[in-house]
Length: 559
Image (tube, rainbow, N blue to C red; front, side, top):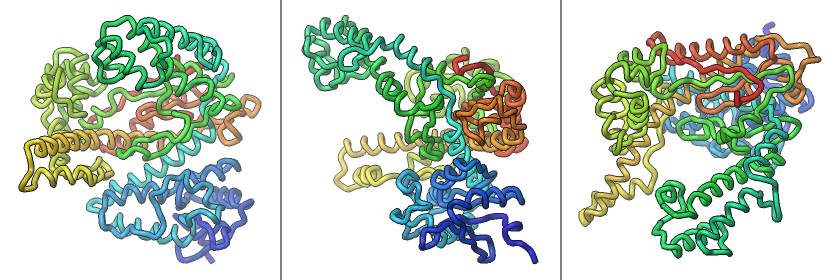
């Protein structure tokens, strides 16, 4: 008699009405599992054959397995895939009495929590899986969407594993940077250098009681000094010639460091030599990751020296050169642009093609084309790109036109931009009314252009995010195949799963940092490059575009 658990390609995980963990295989076979036995049961299934685990949310369920030393190879994250399908296949019957859009942190640890909404009930998990499979079948081209579901779910596994392993962080080095840049903490916790700058600003503005942290007070004081400014933004202030401006701008820079990554950040987020941020896969509408805690996606460059490997280990850092323009060339099947990029810096290739005179101008032009800049140098240079690379520029121009007309656009794998919101619809409706004024029409035109700029970039940034997910997913599997090292050389702060093997420690859009045993540094560098190439083939087939990496190895990310 066959064993359904050994043969099941997918196993759904949820809970019963009593809150017990329940697993279900195809054919209606189910099994109730004690919470204490759950990790070992999952590990046994993983050892038998490849399984895709279906659960409501990776962020809610997987950390419990990781804490017990159990890693899974594949999963289907229903919450993340629900969001993708809702936009991509409207009207496909994904409605449910359970809120599948609620953020993970509002549910965790819902698998064992009876007082929470019942998104993790096994019955709802199975119904949602059935709804999603039906929606996928209704998609115009289900193949790419199936790949996107797998990539998004793999990204969720990477995010959970990276948090569990943590980013190796040298708190003493970080404190040294703070002491050097901000100065020693004085009365009230105000760093010495900030206090000095504040005194200089107050003296220059002749306002001894001014609070530089109060936007209202600062704006009033600047105007009282005869400075006609409309805000306290850096971009406006740096155009003003006054003795108060330079120390004020420096004060604001230090204040940002203190607020975002100062001593309070260290106390909150760094423990036992590890920084453990909370990543949110798909947290941005384009599919890019966000962070729900720790600010991992906004670590300033001056602190990267604190991202430091354990003894006997190294930091292997890889970032992709000009990811979004390369993705644009591949999406548009623009062979001329791909040729300009192949095997070299893309912007240098644009110059070599004769389209743009200098590399700096090529970069400005390309960013302008992808982000919709129409003035200044971008407005002057983008028409040259249109003549040199009509297919690539036609793709983003077409996406912008669709957005301006109120439509939605999709990435290479099918992630779809949201429809116009109610406010934008009201603006457009008002401009079409019989009594519409010229101001109404101008407002509608501005709103349409804004949405066009959004859709112009959505297709490129979203597809770049898909490539990055494919890169992460492939790299994760390659790293898992590397041998574990001697326990005596383990990076114990990374835990039993990751303390003995190379692992992804940090991810930022087009950059991956791997914490690796020193003797495996070359193997990890090779894995990073091969994964990047594999991601390109997976998405774009044989189209001749490459994704070159800048790979560096050292004791810290600053190297």
